[in-house]
Image 1: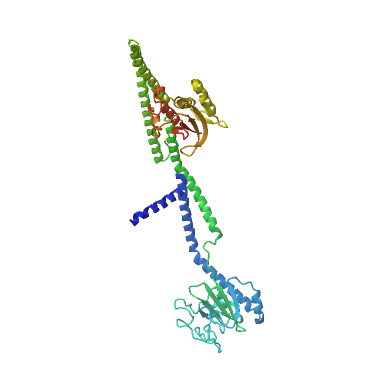
Image 2: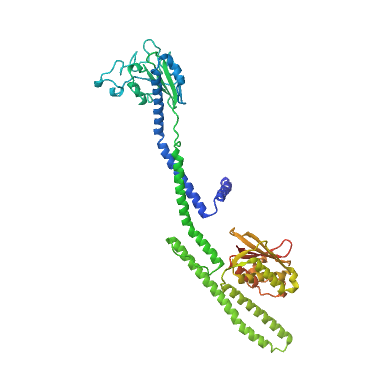
Length: 530
């Protein structure tokens, strides 16, 4: 039960996400591919940047150690009395903190570095043949490489007043302890200094797991310690100025290819949709070109085959209907002639009335077939002038209702492409129906949106009649259907007028619908594309 109750929120969330997506297939395809391209580009550039983190980190360490050696070199050459003043005047990097103290750094675990133990004599300028100068390459004063007593009665460093930690003499764990002879490359330059400028001792301190370091140099003359604490700034994998440029350039190029490719892929779908729309308006529309990729060609062939079958079906039906109507004219005429020989006047009049009704139905059937099969060319016409002509002709045809015919012309002329004769017959049929069944006809024109949200024209024909039941509004467009309860049958009619009007208007890309007006009467709304 809990799982069943949790399904609707997920469905609602999915529907909400779908509603946020663009409606067109082209836009959705572009969005998906460009988003995927951005993710791939970001992942690739991120991996590339992370690969350089270690290099950048080493470069930062090298730069900091180079700064430390340069500062020591600058200060050791000065007289002891001038060093404090010169240190204050130096431009020190922002991540450095430098002081003179009587002891080395004691905040971080560290290790003394023997100078210049483990270094090639040629690197530190020692004499050829491996002979070393006094004090050069041997243990520091006061003991061997591991002696932290300080020598000459000095207290032990950096653990003043006590013994080193039990995990090692240098404060590091066994895995983190530096080799006694290790010397970072920039600090190896100390071995190239003259003996009088070399520090007595060097203490390198670092707390594992942090980026905090300290270098302590014991000055060779006054035995004070130059303590330099610094923090290695973390490298920024995206700090390269070319990172965003590369990302933007590759994304723009890839996005352009995606837009072009999706346009090429989706264009046949739009062409097929336009062809289907044109076929709905005119069964004699031009066939689709059958060129292009195999799948597109197969779709075009299938569509053209379907259109040909539809045309053949419509043509066969129209021809059959027209032939039946045409063949019925001859027997109806013979029956009329024979009815004249009936002596009973009342019976003769009934026969003739039925035959007249049959003849009017046959005439309407022939007109329906003619309008369905006739292919009138599309022309540009002035819709305002056409509607004014229809209103004038309706008033002349029904002089008793001439004052009930009105037309509200638009403020500016409206020009559309349509089959003028067929459109005029359809609109005239609607206006005459309004006069015949509703007693009035008010014609107006407005702009609206069609079913596909394209700009369209709406022609409204209102009457003041009794209206129609809601269930009959759509049924009235079926052939040979007449309203028997809400319309006056004594006025005549065959039930083909609205069917012919809808067939004509749909053949021009439009449509017609009926609706009851709130204030009473019926409204026929004709939608035509601009």
